[in-house]
Every structure is written in structure tokens, then in C-alpha cells.
Length: 243
Image (cartoon, rainbow, N blue to C red; front, side, top):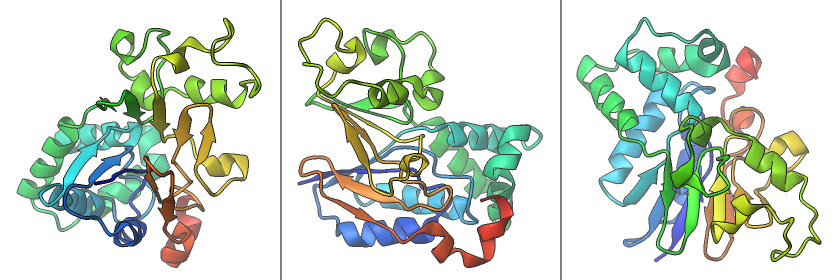
């Protein structure tokens, strides 16, 4: 039995399908999706539909991302169109729902409404879309929206002195709360890296699917990973729209 973390998908159904095929999931495996299932490429509604169907066959945990929050709000109220969301993939997501029935949209809304903001497993490994700010961990976080918006956790580890011992009084207390932390939200391609990035006990598995990168599936025990093709190659007719 293996546990996999799959990074941000952003409407890239073709990329998600490639990753799932490469993982060759077996009975007993678990897949933890790191959020941002929608917005960007043209198949957001189709991604959500596949995830719903996949959860009926295999153990899945779906974390909520910031783009998922915006899509949820729109599915709940079609007049609730966040202007920033519309410009950053929302338009493509709305178009992807053409042909979906009212009942199917309702099912997707329920999917989004039930997404947890984080997952903490029995080995004290934390999975969340973005980050948290409380020195005492996620259970003490006062601002729930930080779980899908915060970048300070990732920025902190980027600036961390790699030679600083974990028992140092200067070692970040946020990192000491958990065995490992898995995040998405900030593409590793922002740092000219197409692979997952590991710093200290934090693993970033968002490898830029929203833009010119890939979707990644990481085995959290072995740290082996598989990746899709670059998204622009899978959706060549869409490269110039908002990328």
C-alpha cells in the first residue's frame, strides 16, 4: 500500500490522466490531492467529474485550494464571479461547465463544499494547499483562509539556513510541529525548477501545471515521483489565452 500526493491540476484533465496511469494505483493505495483542481486549462469541470468518480474506486483525500473556493462560490451563486478569479482561469472554468446539467453542477458544488482545508495523517504528516502561520500548528490557526492562501511558510523555508540544526533555538517552530509538510499553491517553476522541491521537512509538489509546467504525483514514502507532459503541449490551442 502506498500514499501519493498529487499537485495542482488547474483544469488539465489530460495531464491528470497521464499521472494516474503512470502511478498504476492498486487496491489499498491512497491518493491525497493538494488542491486547485480548476482554473487555467479547458477541462476543469471534467477534472472534478473524474475525481468524484475516482473516489468511488480508491481511497482519496481532496484538499481545498484557493481556486476551488472561487469555483465553489460561483457554483453556489452564478452571479458571484470574483473579478480576479475570472481573469485567472475562472473564465475557462465557467466555459468548461457548458453541457453539464443542473444536477451535475449541484454534485460538484457538494464536492467543493466537503473539501477539507488540511489533512494530518497518523504519522504526523501534514497536507494542505498553501500554508499556515500559527507557531503552534494548524489547529491553532486563527485565519482559516491561510490554509489555501498563505505563502509565508514556503518563503520561510526558501530562506532557511540549511546548516541550522533542528534543535537550534532559531529553527522555525512551525516546522517542528510535523514530521513532514506537503504543499502546493506556489509553482516550483517560479524558481526555474520543473520537479518537486524539498527544503527541510517541506515538500512542494506544485510543478506549474497552471502555466508551462506539469502535474506531479509523489510517493510520500519513497519520494519517487511521476509527471505528466508539459501542459502547453497537451493543450496547444490554448497557450495564448491566459498563460
